[in-house]
Length: 267
Image (cartoon, rainbow, N blue to C red; front, side, top):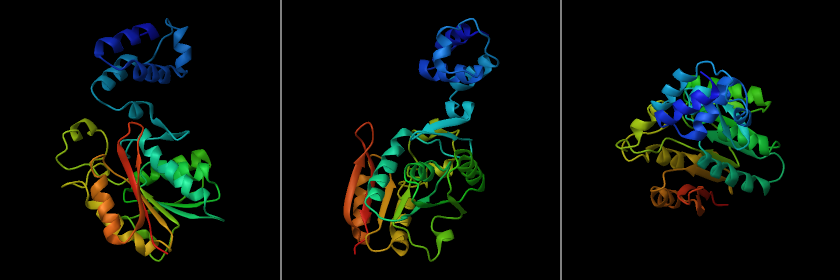
């Protein structure tokens, strides 16, 4: 199958043009610009790969990588695919770190592919970054990403704060599972690990756990930043304030939806 034939098949299958171009370029070992002038070039495996894409398999799983905050990250079905909206959390973290002297300590909880931890380390090399995930396969992917990018992160396996007993961090960030257990969008995300998407129930269980436990690992003035669903901002803000956090604030994603909330531990 040639480039032009593959693009025509993608149209018939209803595959979004940009995704089709990215997949075909990956299969050809070229960039998307190359496709324009090489319509008759062969593309090995294009028919099967496009059918998988049309059937709902994520593009990132077919190419094995996903861009995030200027980094190219390896992803597998063992990890959540990093989304552009999560860059909001990274940008907020970097703003806070810019105001801290020396070597601020950062913890990323539920790191998955390592996206948040690695993006922070890449942009703020003086920070010491620790990243935690319960999943050993996910941590293998994160560690491999760190090695490939030449970024030093302390990877720890365990449930939330369990591997961090006695440690304190100037900044704690997390993109925890927050989708409600009955959310109708979950079936469309079936190729990603369910435990990284939802804790069940109203989706707030892990957010509550993090808010409750974080003060034990924050010095006075330390920050907690959490990604959440667009309709969970009010509930998360109440939890933060009720736990004693001050300066509770909200950040919106690229679509203008409430995406992350944070607060500062007093002192």
